[in-house]
Length: 115
Ligand SMILES: [Zn+2]
Image (tube, rainbow, N blue to C red):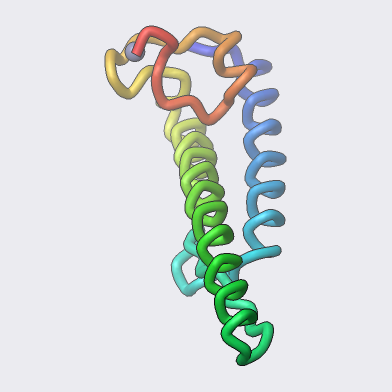
């Protein structure tokens, strides 16, 4: 089991990361009714075919970024949930304890280095 002090430290890091991800997401997407779910905004630049092409490209870029951020946010939220349940710090694959250095570098890690 992880010591409370380390858990608190990682919990704090996760809460900060969650806030950062939500800020980043809100810049390019709108939150939907489902918590943690976002919808990429489509910027309407104009009606010229040039503008339309830029809009579509722009949207595709944002969509990729949004999906990535949303995935990271889900990892962070899941990690926070595991801390609450007391199951945090174990590899989802082999159920071994995840190395503390790995958790410090990436608190939302689901698996150990080997997996
Ligand atoms: Zn593992």
